[in-house]
Structures are given as structure tokens and as C-alpha cells.
Length: 405
Image (cartoon, rainbow, N blue to C red; front, side, top):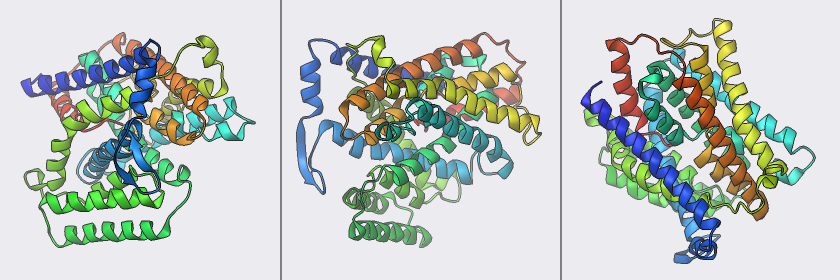
């Protein structure tokens, strides 16, 4: 294993630990004498008045502002992977796309079954559909050589496709009303960014200024502001090669800020759920639906799609992997922390009890999925490795550091 790979793997492990500590700190604060101070902190308003919302409090600045940078990073990686990376060939896209589709549909169905008959709660069907790759990569980093390189590559590829689906859901399902003037202006800014790209503008600062304007206009339009991050990423030039790539430069520049700043901050502002109800809270339909969707739905959906694709000879078995490895990867896809918490807040904007139940279900489902995925991969016999697999590990470490959804 190269020194570069060891360094990158250590960074991923540290990022996972930082996120876990932030989430734990939020849980402790929400279930201690600090609960009042924690709640006051989240609702402290500051900054300029924003269109449609007025002044943002801390929770909104994180969810609508900082998380736009998180989605910018997702968009940059999706574009790079689609044109130059693991998803650049149609054959390479087949298995991740099928697995991601299964991993979104089945959890949504499991949630809908648990909450059938309650139209208000059914709005949360998308909560267990997303995977938190930051946590999943943290688990893989801890596993080290116990997880085949092909499994690591597959998991990250599934998450890339999964993120595209989650962004589409947020844009299409959780947008309440549209301001046509603001949306038209936003599309005009996006078109201007595309023209700059076609004209060969390679400096980043014009795109960053345009991206800020785009974020403001998308916020004013009623579409969730984080979508602006993805749209801006699609307009950033990829460049002719890795040495002349504004997209790659921006991706590497913002990655540590997202990994060690934005994501842990979101975890701290979102994971604080009061556990006074104990296990009784998990029996509530929303909490139960999210937990089962992540823990059962993800395993059935992802593994079922992979099994069917391989049995039908649509794709080959990933190199160096067996069925237990693939099951372990499917279980890790049930870690839905960041995106599930984010969608939960969007699904129930006026129902605090439903949001709290969704948080609890997310935490429980993610913890169960992480435990089962770790056990399956840790205690499955290792396949023989060669220099080619070690090289693949280095590729995984280099690309995984740009993934946090």
C-alpha cells in the first residue's frame, strides 16, 4: 500500500470520526441540561434578510447555505465521474445504476407500507432512499483490506448515482411554490455560465461569483437553494486534462472544508433528537418506516438488484468479491445519515414531532446498517490481492475523498 493511499485512507477515517463526534455531541446536548441552550443556538437569527424567509437562523444557514457547498461538491464529482471516471463507459454505469434504483425504490416502498393511510406522513417516503457515503467510506476505511477494492469502487459508484436521484427528488417533490421571475433569472445566470464555459473561460472566480448569484435566485424562486450547487457544478469547465481542470481544482479546494466543516456542522445541527420516549418512539410510523427502509429496504433493494443483474448476465461479478461482500456493501448503503436528515426536514417543515421521529429512525437504521455491513465484510475471508488491486485502492482513495453523500 502506497504512502499516499495510507494518508488518504487516514483522512477518510478521521472525517468519519469527526462526523460521528458531531452527531454524538448533538445527541448529548439534546438530552442533557444543555437542551435549552442547544435549541436556542439553532434558532439564533443573524445575517441579512433573505427573500421569502427573512433572517435565517443557524439551522437554516447550514441547511440552505452551507449545504449548497456540499451539493456543489456532489455535482463536481458526478460530472467528473460521468465524463472521465468510473461512469464514463456505458458498461461501467450499468451495475451502479441498477443497484441505486433498487436501493431507492424498495426503501421508499417499505416506508410507504409502514405509514400507509397517513397522507401527511407519506411525504417522508424519500427519507430512507439516500445513502450517506461519508459514513460508509469511514466504515470502509476502518475495514481496510477486509473490503475488496471492487466493493469500495462499487459502493462509491452507487452513491454517485444515488446522489443524482436524491437531488432530483428534492427539486421535484419538495418544492412548495415557484416564483417564475426568480426562476427565469436563475436559468439566465446558468445559461451565462454555460456560455463562459463554451467561450473557454478557465478562471474560477467568474464562475464562483455567478454561482453565488445563482444560489440567491434559486432561493428566491422557491426551489430548494441547494439545487443551485449542483447546477453550478455542471457549468464548471472540466478541462482537457487533470493538470488543466478548473473543476478538479475547485473540487480539491472545497473538499476539506466540506469534509471537516460543512458535513459535521450539519450533523451537529440536525442530529439532536430528544430520546425521552425511549424505544416507544421507534414504534411511531415515521420512525419505524425510516429505520426499516434504511436497514431492510436498502439491503433488499441494492442486493436484490445486484443479484438479478449478475444472474441475468447483465453484468459480471465484481473482481475479487463474493456474495457476502456484495451483501455487506448493500448493508452499508443503508447508512443514510446526512441526506436522510436533510430530506426529513424538507418533508415535514411544519411538523416538528415527525421531524424528530425521522431523525430517530435515521439514526437507528444507519447504526444497524453500519454494524451489519461491517460484520459481513470484516468476517468474510479475504480474496487474493495483487498489484492491480492495490492500484485500484489508490484510485478509490483519491476519488473517495471527494464524496460525502
